[in-house]
Image 1 (cartoon, helix red, strand yellow):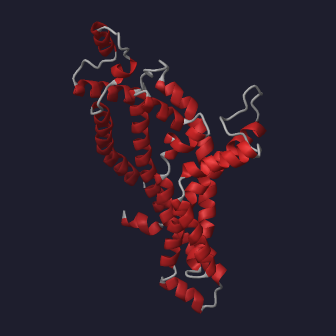
Image 2 (cartoon, one colour):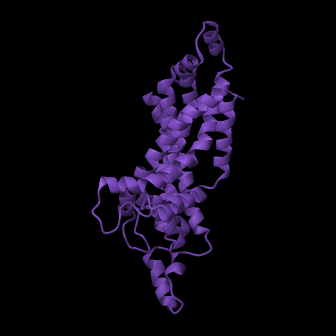
Image 3 (tube, rainbow, N blue to C red):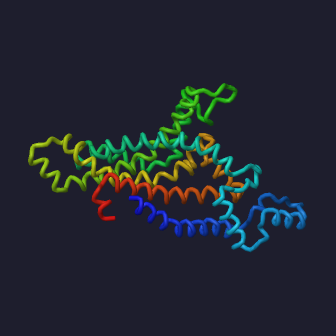
Length: 317
C-alpha cells in the first residue's frame, strides 16, 4: 500500500507542474494586467512603470513563473493587489467558512442520493423509479441560482423565517443558533443542486449490479429484496461513489461560487469572484492552483479507499 501511494504521488508531480503552467499562462494571456485595473486615467507612465517593477511584471514570463512557483512551494501566496492583505491569511480565514457550508450539504445530499438511487435502481421502471427520475430531471433542469433566489424571496423576504445574508446577524453577538439559521437556506440550495446527478449515478450502478450472478443466487436462496439491496448490492454500489466523493473534494477549497455570492457567505467562492472582478491575480492564481491540487488529492484518496474496501483491486496493484 505504501509503495502504491508513493508511486501515485510521484506520478502527480508532473501533472502539478503542467497545471501550474496552465494557471500561470491563463493569467498571462489575459487582455489586460493588474496595472490596468489599478491605474487611473491621469496616472503618469513613470508611475505605471514603477508599479510594474514593484510587482515584478517587468520581468520575462518564465522568471515570473519561477518566482511564483518558489513562493507557492514555501507557502508564500503573495499579497492581494486590492486589499494588500496576505492571500494565505485571507484563505485561512475563509476556508473554514466554506467547509462549514459545503461539507454538511454534500454529506446530506450523498446520504439521500444513496437511498433514493438504491430504491429507484432496484425498482427499475416502477412507480417509485418514475417519480424519482422525474424529480431528478426537474432538478437538473433548474438552475441553482433560481432555486436560491426563490428560497430567499419566499422564506427570507416574504415570510421572514430565515436570514438571507452572511453568517451572523449584524449588531448581535455571534452564537450557534444564529449561525444555524443563516446556514439553513444555502445548505438546502446546495443539497438540492447535488441530488439529481448523484441519484442517477447510484441508480445506474444499482441497475448494473442487479444483473450480476450473485444477485440471482441470493434470489434463488429466497433472500428478500431489502436483504439483497442493503446487505449485498449496496457494498458494490458504493465503490463508484468513492470516486464521486473524491472528485468533490476541491469544493471544500473553492466553495460554491453562485450560492456563496447570493447569500453573501464569506467563503472562498465570494473571495474568488471578487478577485476576478478586480483582476487580483495573486488570489486568482492561488485559488486555481490549490483547487487543482485538491482534484489530484481527491483522486489519490479515492484510489486508496478503493484498495482498502476491495482487496481485489489491491491485489491487482
